[in-house]
Image (cartoon, rainbow, N blue to C red; front, side, top):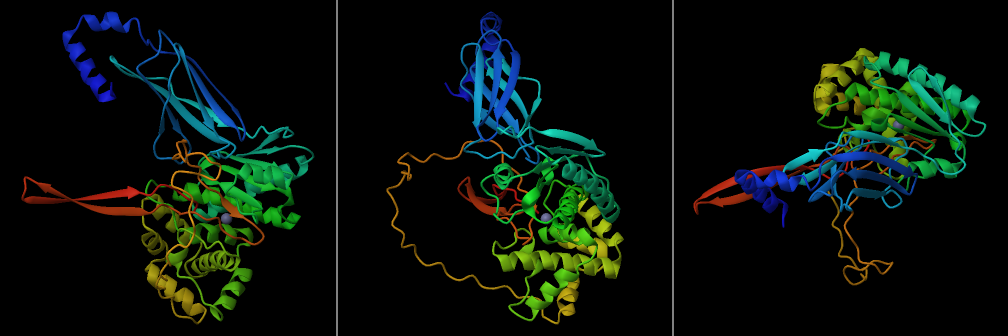
Length: 446
Ligand SMILES: [Zn+2]
């Protein structure tokens, strides 16, 4: 019996009256105790007791930070309990993710929800005996002999937060966790399968979590990387809005500029590229940076140099005005204009003029040739199994990373809006056009 049918049946029974309550007393009568457990890189397991028996339908609603809605998992209950295992070996979940969840039962009497609970998914891999210390807004976590370095990161977090708050005219919206990894294997094991090999530090702004790797670079590099990453988190708070992610070049530009409050090295990179292969349009590096080394480096350099231009020409307060506009829902162009008083196009033009080049023109896409790859029979995978669509909850907000090479991670930025026009014939003669806009499936870092 389908759910709709059951609801209809419930309606009929409710009208009939008497028989319903007698029936319901024998069935599901509420949620009992619930528990959650996890092993990093393997699973998060949710369990709940079902008082009086199983409901007709049972679902687990799961939300992770930054997601706009709950992921609904249908769960087949046993007689008096239910269990859902989220396979995090197949579906990577970033450590320190705070999972919010709620059970939902559907019976002929209606819908009941369990109390909303949270569970923090910890990196509990063998050998990681975490210790921690609280320094102001930051909690630093370390293992092994990294206490001294971890405490230094805590101090740098406080310094970075204070500087970024002053620069962006905002306050940190909540605490920050900093996890300090000693070995490369431990660090990349935390970042998951999508991380680029050049990554030396990463901030997951939605999770308010920064991952540092002690082998990521020299002591001097680690110090500026720490400031860079914490600036991303303040920037996230300064621009937080329900509409879109701010331009990525601006986010990375501000984080990189904040390392030393100047852009001398980055300006040299832009000047070199301007006299060579050319520069990127800012619209082209709003959501994604190129994966390649040159493109990634130039994207960071253009962002940082543009931030330097804004600060020099319009003052640091211009950046605070830009972030305030984002908070109010401004587009990239509107936010830049709110901060500088000139249009985004004028701002871009003055940037290219500084390097003696014309603003880049769009490049026509090259045609894609027909595939000559021999494909296996449909529905089979290499492992010989039948491919199934992914059915795991949650989409991790990807990190803002820092590396000596400063290159990006692939993805799709703030999301793409897909507009479909659907024509409907109504009463044979009237045609109605319905605009359907849908946010594309994945959010990516700014
Ligand atoms: Zn960054």
